[in-house]
Length: 119
Image (cartoon, one colour):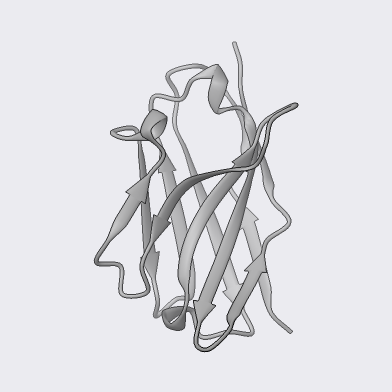
C-alpha cells in the first residue's frame, strides 16, 4: 500500500521558517517526480514546488521563489520543503504529490499538513 505522509507543519510567525517532510512508503521514490501543492482557505489547490526523479531540476511558484527550497533523498524515500521568510499568504494545507508516467500516469497524494503563518 502506497502512503505519502507529510509532517512539519504548524503555527509560525511572519518571517519565520518551517521544514516540511514527506515520507513515502510502498513505492520506489526514485521512479517518481515529486511536488508540493498547497490549498489556502477559499482557494484552489496550487503547485508550490516540484523536483524531478533524480533531483536535477526544480521549479517553483513565482511567489515562493527565493524563499522555498524543495529537495529529495531517494535513499531515504523522503522529500522536503524548506520554507523561509514565511508570509501570511503562505497559510494553507500543504500536500505531497508523487507522479510517474510510463504509458499511463500513476499518481499519489498525501493527506496534507497545515501551515499557519500568523502573529
